[in-house]
Image (cartoon, rainbow over all chains, first blue to last red; front, side, top):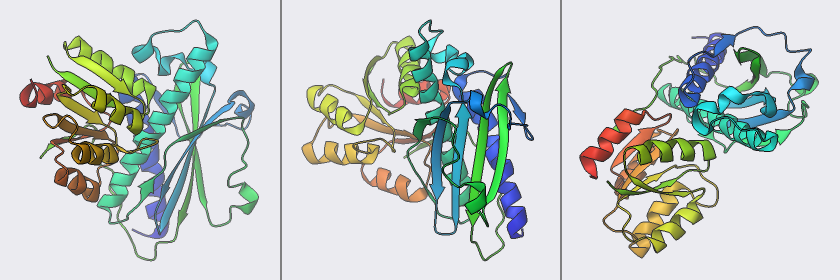
Length: 185
Length: 121
């Protein structure tokens, strides 16, 4: 697998993992993936951002999730029920997206581990305001950026991954959907 | 029925886990970080099972477990790790500290309840 093919496999894994994890964690099956969203017009409508890092010596991935915490009730309705209070709804949605980003990062870390690439994951960070202060395109030379969308009816989460890959060798990255294993000792 | 401590920094995960365990008639204590988990363990010597996340603020799940061993907190309690991190190094460390089950998130309710039924109740 060439460097380019590895990066494509990684992008594909991130998209598949984000869809499968949101379905499982939110206990809702009717989320869908849009691989090529036109997000240029609605960034301003997604004031919340959750960010998590998957970092190793040769591979560094920044995963960002943009969303409007006040307009994503399906993220929380199975677990918390519906809330009439906007602030409470918003707080809970942010918590769901933080844990979702943690689930995706953990899954990708496992896939990289299996490919012989050691990485660690950060705690997720949440912030407000759409602003590409991290990794602006004009200072992003050599980084591979991808974006996709997970949606359910009118609710949308925009995912952005930024990958720095300095692997010298050809590495195979195989996608394995391994949710929820229990290993007894 | 078992008395179970859950420690995870995600409120959503704690709510899901609490609901699933309480619906199965278990008694649940919840902690939002490692330090709160240690405090609950110091105050509740009759805890039978700890379900700990690994990556938490203040103290990780494995640090909580080290503290349990150092201070002999709830010596009869079983410990399950519930985490996204499935690296062999961490599992080995957990195993050496006496972890009984390594559960990869997102968990499946039925599988988790079956393991609790088998090992704890």
